[in-house]
Amino acid sequence: MSDAEVHAARISGSSKKRVMALTREGRNYVEAKRQVIRENFNRWAQQTSKAAKRPRSEGESPQQWQPAKKVKARAGEKSYSEALSFVKVAIVQEGYPEAQLAPERLTAIQQAVLKEYDQIPKGSMQVRLAKCMYRPGFVLATCADQFSAEWLRDIVPKLRPWDGARLLPLLGDDIPRPETAVVFIPDEHGSRVEADIVLKRLEVGNQKLCTDNWKVWGCKPVEGGQVWTFSMDRASLDEMRRLKMSPFLGWGQVKLG
Image 1 (cartoon, rainbow, N blue to C red):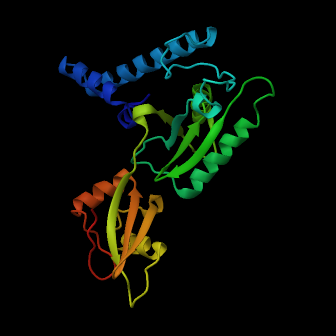
Image 2: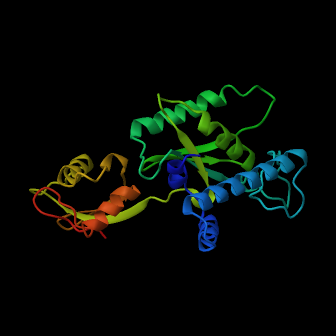
Image 3: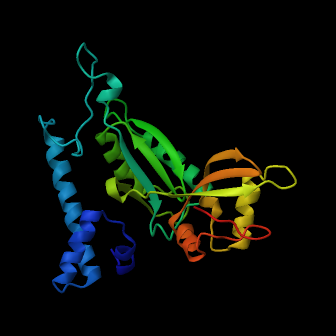
């Protein structure tokens, strides 16, 4: 990995502590982070190699890689759905969060995954993709078991849904968590202002906001307007904080909480 790629790589909280410990020992930050990334990869490779050669033993951590097992529901046992161990995988553009994926590219990624899925020979393996959701700037996939999550993680760097695509899979603590904000939008002449108008006005008045990556989660009518709940990408949140959570919107500013 280049120094820029090392800087852009997302790592978990425990990995960050390991990097800090190495820097306190006098190591260069980039080299310390590169070492931690290498250690994490080697640890993952050893776990997957061992897990592929043996069935899961009693008491083994559910986070460890394992082949999917058929589950039959019997009296006193967990149901079929309870026996599944759902695992989430985020698919991001290399350089996230600075590099954000536009909505049309989220769709292209979903389709590219299905193309790879269709190449799996019958009888070779069982891959279960439970859900695909679009988040601000990235795709969040839910797999029904750890084996399926590992299959997805392996194919993501190989996907080329558009020229120049460089995609990365993130799991566990590395999965981005979109920030949410609540804002009151007053009615205009007694009529509700639609979402596309609000988002456009926010971007026109605050050019560092990229509202294409936002999602409206809720809109509650109140006296004189609507209370909206947004999720936004991290870059937009940083700009919001610079604006003290008071972006310009048409005539004046609104206050986000």
